[in-house]
Image (cartoon, rainbow, N blue to C red):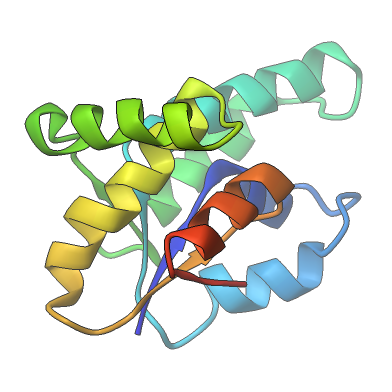
Length: 146
């Protein structure tokens, strides 16, 4: 099994005051199953970290982003999948027409259905998300959701 973690799940791994923090940390950063996400997640995580800093939740965004980068490095627990526009954008466009998804939500699902599925080589890809619309769309596509 391959887990595709979207930003809504990964961001909770890095903020102890977020719901499901311990559970998601154990599952995604300390678990035995391989975890992947889109390289776009790194930008979304940077946005969340800087937003938390501006809101006073986080004193030093640079140190948390260094942890994120280490976790997404070659030997880290999360592999960043390079965006393959030719495989992803057509499916993402179809997904926004079929489901009430925002554009990046559709891109995450499309990456999970294309690049991650190819990497999994026939093994199941499980979407780990805390976004209800993304979870519903993934389930409608026949994907397992955690």
